[in-house]
Amino acid sequence: MFHTPTRLTTPVMRAALAAAPLLLFAGTALAHPGHHHHEGGFAAGLAHPLLGLDHLLAMLAVGLWSLRQSRALSLGAPLLAAAGMLLGAGLAWAGIALPGVEFGIALSVLLAGVMIAALVRVPALVGAGVILLFMLFHGHAHGNEMPHGASMLAYLAGFTLATLAITFAGRLAGGWLMARDNRILRGLGVALAGLGALFAFG
Image (cartoon, rainbow, N blue to C red; front, side):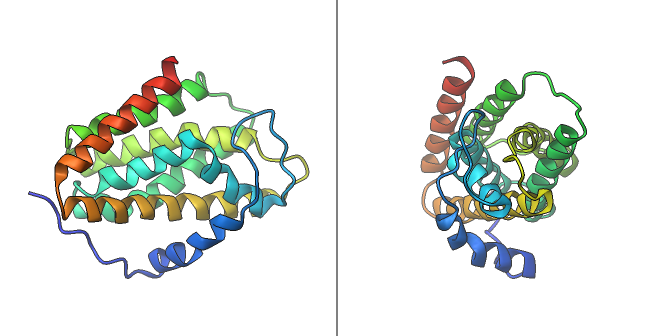
């Protein structure tokens, strides 16, 4: 049985949704090394998750997948995603390397897609660990790619807000799909898994 999508009534949820239009004005920053960021720290932080396709798909996938989980995990998924991102960025800024960051990012998209396609449900603690681990790699990449001279706090605020907004968008999209036909949701999971495989092995 599916959980009925919960109303987004908490202040954090309302703030994230209200801020979502700001993502459209985040500029032209791209999400991988070698691209130049001309924005300030906050705008670059907003743009980084939004315009990096692998980051964007992973966050949307977390939101989609979370809807079939326990109420606690479903409601907490956006905050867990943001926490994983912050932890990963903190490790990067502390000079702690993670092996295979780009592969880990691609694998997070692939595995999230598989879990959506298979309608996988897990205990809340396991699911929380999975989300944190997935987003740890994304956050590490964000930390390493902060524009030179940008304010760390502004950059953190930007990509945290973007993470919350994108994950909530995934939950909203998932709720809309689940109310119609879960075959569409499963097909979307297959597509995400395929893209993740392309990122990882293409």
